[in-house]
Structure formats: C-alpha cells, structure tokens
Length: 153
Image (spheres, helix red, strand yellow):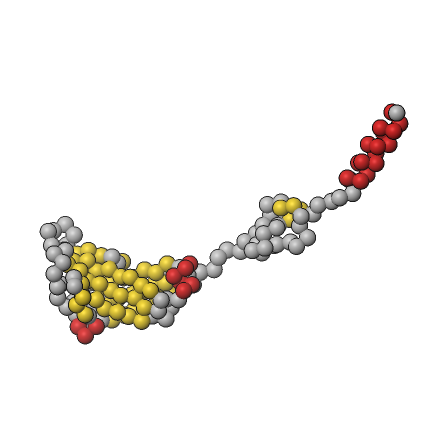
C-alpha cells in the first residue's frame, strides 16, 4: 500500500510539473506586450506620452466685437481645436496688456465695486472671447486687443 502511494505521488508530480507558464507583460497597450505571456509579471512598459504644443496670436479690432447681452464677444476660427484636443488636451488663452501676457479668465479692478472680466471658451475649430462687466450692462466695444491661444495635446 505504501508503494502505491509513493508511485501515485510521483506520477502526480510528473504530470503537474510539466506545465510551465511564461511570465511577461499581458497588457496589449504596453510597448512590451507579449502574446506568449500567460502570467502577468508586472513588467509592462509604456513609452512617455509625446505632447504637441500649438499657439497662435489673434488680434481684434472694433469690427470683431458683437454685443450679446450681457457681454461683448469676439469669435475666432482655429483649426488646431480638433476632437483630439477636446478629448485629451489642454487649451489656455491669454490677453496682452502693457505688463505682458495675462491668462484668461482675467478680472480687471477685482477689488472695486465695478469690475470687468475677460474670459474664453472653445469648441471644435473655434473659440470665443467674452468681455463682461460686473453690473451686467453693455461694457462697450473693447476695440483693438491681442489674444494668444495655446493648445497642448
């Protein structure tokens, strides 16, 4: 009976000892994905994400501004604003003043009872700059201003 138990154990170890599982990266989106891997060993490698930056300067004149209560608005077309930028990117807008570029939204005279805010919003292939006064009345035509749009994607 003892002999039968020993032979059974030997047979069992021979049968189970033959199966080898190859360890490796099992994530198909990784750079070192292995179709042969049957066990994920945590070695997956992902190349650093490559970023692209695009920027462009836009100028306005009084003709660009339209009053849509309660703001003056200027609309621009910019083909860089694709679906990929909307899904994965970041877009920033700036206005140029005597002291340099200021990121939007920007509020002038923020500590006083009356202030003006310049803001931006974007969609596919276009963006809008809005100038709104705190009293929500017509802020008047802002005239000539310079804006910069920067997209990182």
